[in-house]
Amino acid sequence: MAEDTPLLNRKSSSSDSQINNSRLYLAVFSAVLGNFNFGYSLVYSSPVLPKFKSPDADPRLRMDTEQAAWFGSIYSLGAAAGGLGAMRLT
Image (cartoon, rainbow, N blue to C red; front, top):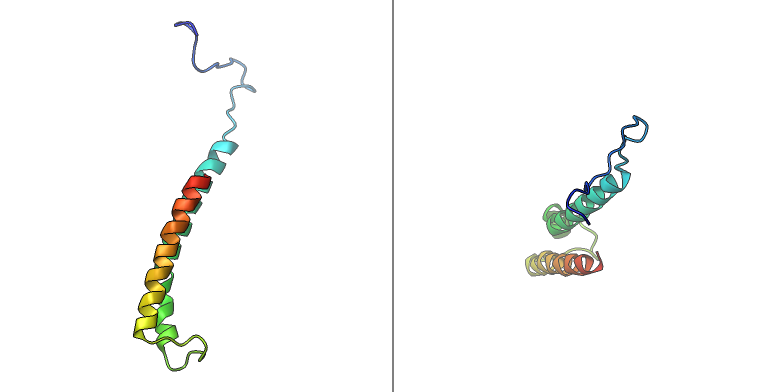
């Protein structure tokens, strides 16, 4: 490419000067949605654990303190591994 070649080819016509940013918006939305999903999965267990530990919980879902700690930590580790896998796929 020559030194005097412009990087952006701007046309003088008003109908051609409109830039279509739909792919840019889609890419930004995809990137933000991935980060939102990762953050949501890291804090998922926070509001749910008190309900699992309560005596009113379904007996099949009831957890003691140790089980609740494992649930919160393993879910977070799984989210981190899933985020790394998604990064590789992206």
